[in-house]
Image (cartoon, rainbow over all chains, first blue to last red; front, top):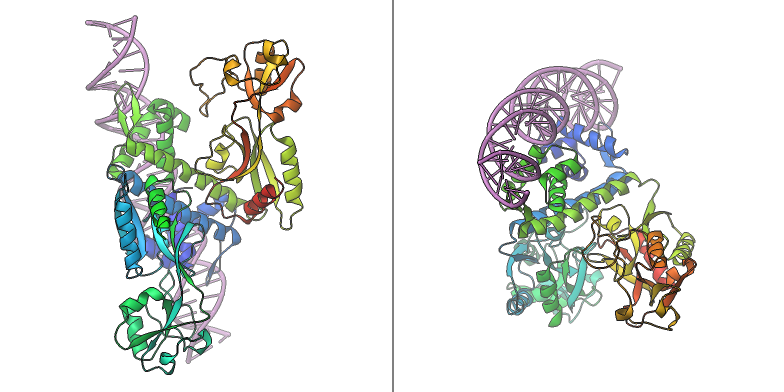
Length: 272
Length: 272
DNA sequence: CGGTATCGATACCCGCGAGGTATCGCCGCC
DNA sequence: GGCGGCGATACCTCGCGGGTATCGATACCG
């Protein structure tokens, strides 16, 4: 199996559409069809069931999809690590705007370590765990249960309660605490592929948008304590009694054997 | 990076000789030289330093070598798992002739589990951890400190003392215990590449050979308790006071997310 | 029920690049 | 200084990856 074949397969498996996948890969559709067919032939199993109207994954296809994603992630990570061996550095992924203080403390403390390497920050709008899987980052600061930590090694750093973000004019804004069931429809965030799951609640894709929607009374949100500091005028945060606690964790790929990652994790867990 | 390039690079990095590597890959030497040069050019770093008399790894090359090995292992594992998704099975690597009883108990106990899958045994003469790295096996029974468990997830199962294997006629054969320093030169086993580290002591490559050498008074060995049961006539086992304990462990690749592996590990640790 | 649009498969062609052979240039060695 | 071993270079060939055109199947529509 060549990585080219895996890239092609992942594209088709994610798009479930040969035309769009070919488009995304920047090639024409026929060679893509042929490559997938060859791959299936060599593996001796069907990866996709196609009618002329619908493409779907077989069980084998689902297995190969997850395997292929980790392989391709390992490949890009290997390229980066090989390229930057002279000037070793660490890429840390974190949510833009979140946990600023924790991050500053962590970076300072790590920089003071003997043998510390340069830390590059990769700030993500969302889905902070993805760079870990596709090899663009070595470590990430994630927030359970929002971020998926499947297949990652994790150390908890900090746990905090969640708050409902409401317009100051909202009937519940004066309460000392509220329950999930009392809240209006929560805003929805995009999935990794950019689409939105169906459901009630407005669709937003960043904090500014979200706050505006809440101010306008069009949405509500439940978020960890940290966002309170940056809350714009006219919004209030009310503790939510029955929301799960949010745990800030430091996560890294399980096969990571880098000294720098180990140091950073040690420092992070040290002052939590 | 294509897996073909990685396979080629690993071959050269292991042989440190373009001719032999090309031979091993079943291609001619010039295309191999060219492919490596292209790879270096695309990565923007030198992977190998070559004089016309000697090839050696650069630092970047050493990094890529370990990365490439895990990637190629993941690829073969992915192929196997995809191919066998209909008839899920687990490949367990173990040392041939070692821990027979433990193995039998483990397999029986696991087979009784609900949702147990077929377990294929991969019996190795030595270097039982290699199939884990190259994707041929999902789990392995290893023996620390003999087997390398770097980069693997591990659960200890059982610890046992070591015994010196001596001919019955040896002066120390009657002692109740001996020390390492008292023993004659120990036999040497081959490295993964088939070569032998330099040093005193005869070279052997299996148990039969070893026992014969000991019987002939040409070698001694220090081995865990289990081998006592299969000891041929004329050899005795004497406890060694200062030999490190041997720990039998169950090991698996850290990125393994298979239900079957988790079940087997749980069963194994359960009755240890 | 025919017309049409959509989408994957097939047929066929082209050009690049992987792989082969021959040879060169360099270097350690007798 | 001649020789042998080894990686690099030059050059050719052919297979395969990628392109265009088209087919065949199917859902949708009037």
